[in-house]
Length: 210
Length: 141
Image 1: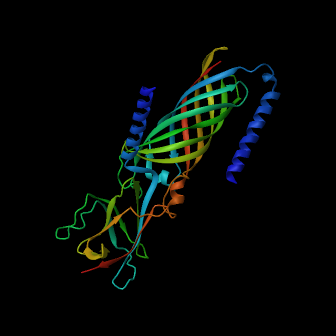
Image 2: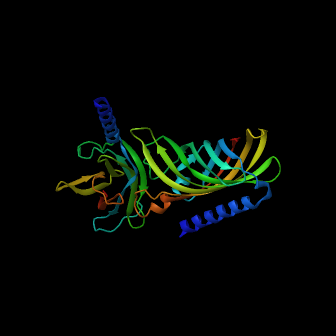
Image 3: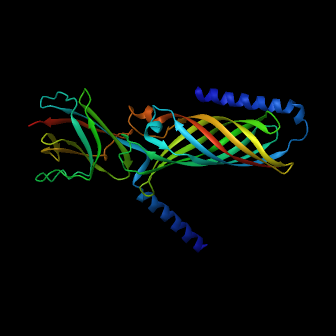
């Protein structure tokens, strides 16, 4: 039911944005095709009360994004990123591992709302896979999570070359829900390990090419 | 054509080798569940237990040996304990240890043992990774 409601809200949001963009006067002309490349520094913190929150102290990491869209319309993007983490005292990993990395990748849709000439608000929602990598191969142990997230942020135009490229400084805050449906563990501990919620902030540079 | 087949064969062989060498099974945990009871079968709460790796439990003449202590835990009000570790691709050996001079009474290979370490293995586990250790009798001096 939750997934259906989420899917429904995404569809309504997308349809609304497309209709809005199509009926706006400034978008009556043929929209420009935009390719975007972004590098973000990201800091994520899981809300306490879950395994991911209580077991790892996550360091700041990075995220690379690639976007595609038409100016004035919602766009689509891919992202991949990584963060290091320190393992805290816990009752699950048995002290077998010293190093941990969070690898994150997925797909998202975004929409930019112009505020003033140089400033835009960017909203995005996405679906991704988070892999918690413990140790090094062959003593590697992976935990797989899927997650839905939403971000809201701002884009400030630093400089641009009309009809060629634009460079933005970006910042965003967001939150996501994580589910580890593939985890195999006793029934008592399963809810604690399976579910988590995070909040994140990011800052970065975005290059958009026409 | 023959070269391509050779390369494919080597790649597959390498993949099988790498998979076979993996020590841990991703996304899987093994849970050891059980309870500590006294000679009359009553649960014992607050018993200090150590979950140890690779115990040398059969060497009864010497002081109990093991690689390291993984967890330290006390039994709950029902005398129960629960130890969770990442699942290994091969049968891993652990032990549930009590502080000496306390001892544990258990049966292995149709023989009765009285030692400070109760050996457990994750070889026989249920679909959710649970190894039911059962009731272990604690002998206090």
